Picture 1 (cartoon, rainbow, N blue to C red):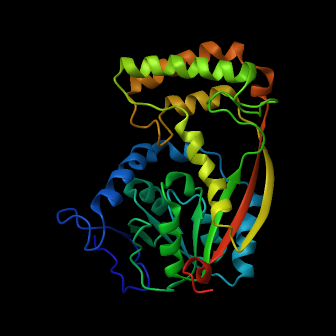
Picture 2 (picture 1 turned 135 degrees about the vertical axis):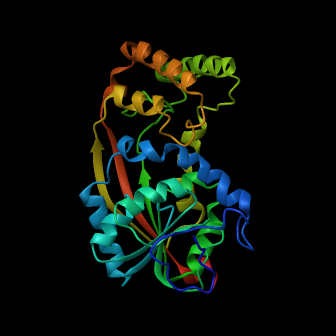
Picture 3 (picture 1 turned 180 degrees about the horizontal axis):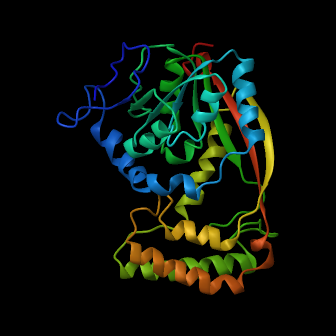
Length: 312
């Protein structure tokens, strides 16, 4: 398969990637384009079945905002299996997907996405202002430093960079157990004590398998969704939906056990099963609020290209 060069305006109808023999093309960091992709390659087969589809209200809000700004040609960075791109394609948008995971994009292609590129958002293989807009959905929490990706996205976008972000209101504690919000400060009280005890037991299991695991890191990373809105305020920010998510505890534990999170996919299977067993045994001890539905707010942010590139 070929690779789209920087002076190419549109993607051909196949997944384009660096030559397997020669590695990444000139100007791209092979370690950045391949290593993270391996993580999502591992979970590609279970990704869709362990994720809730975006609700109609959220998708309609995103479509409406794109249309209001005259954006028809869209590059989605982190297209994954096409959970957002496919509905946009069906809505009449011209969508090109970019991702570092070949396996994830193969799932997207099976759903009808034809224009797909295997590349990193740090160096996007398209010339300036090829697309009306660039879009990211739940990508910020995966990036150590989102700003270089946002600026590169702005470079190839006429209008700007759109991002779908999810806000989890209330007091949230890291744990696959908890569905609702703690009525008190998550760092205090019975809930914090329970979470700390579970983390301690999980670490003992991780040490048994000689696995370096930091259970609280995932929640910290999700904080980047909010952090980027504060450190680099968007030109526009619109709430498109507020939804209530009903998901039982067993569903959350089963997702963990399958290794369906990028942060847990590399765990030995026996380790995940042992931790899942501890989780199931502890379910009767969960506080009542932890069994309640959780609330999520979806917002669409827009950073204009001129703002990100320092031109206005």
